[in-house]
Length: 363
Image (tube, rainbow, N blue to C red; front, side, top):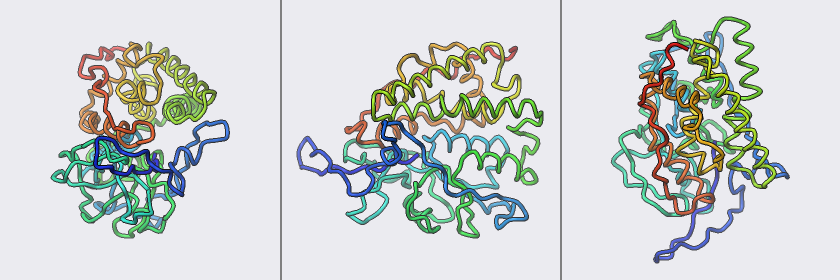
């Protein structure tokens, strides 16, 4: 997800002037809001496939992932890289969680994912407030350490309009974007690199046709529209009616999944799948971010015993746990969308304890 925002003007005092509206789209969520104020997500534009019969062959060290640890979609892709044991085959880089200016042109007010070194000075939010450190989790793209932003990757591949999103799977040889659609990237990583993977037998996609169909229906009807995207629909709604519709969907979805996970360990029964991964990455952001920031405050995940246990269960998987950076998650949401949080104040709450026992082994 990408939002454009206008920087405020410094006044050499304790306050900053109200930012002016840019001449182009103020931000991506406003650009795709309907007349009713409902948020509508943009579709991914780059959707190619990797196999021996395409322009993108299966090769070690050819592909690179541009990753934001704050982004649930990108987080899931990186988790699968580790679960498959492909971290030495597919390289990755990590952007700063706070969006920064992506062009030196003073008339270009686009803010988005930017690269910084761990030794760089702290970053302010788009209005110039705050001081958000460059920590040791930041990783420059090894194939081009001069890259300044994810936007630059898209621009150099001929995409001048964006949105400039993560995850972004990039071909370092062809110098082209393979895909910026997280669902496509998950399948590519899961299916196409087994000959190079340390764990080729691991899969997020069950072979049972009935279960495959059940998961697809559950995703299409509940997980994606009501939960994954529902929190964004709630947070970026621009009318009370649009918000009420979205937030009602969120909690209808959570109640349904709570009931389902009360009697079974994962959404597909006893097997961890792609849909569990997608659900998990939304749920762990819910209490520390979405409850406050996206106004999804009817209940917390901590109030749902099965959902909380599910989060703890998935978090206990080492390859997943190592990718979770709550500092990046909170910093991104609370500092990047300056219109929603002008001073970039980050709330203290990190959500429920994910290290506690989940006690779900026997479900």
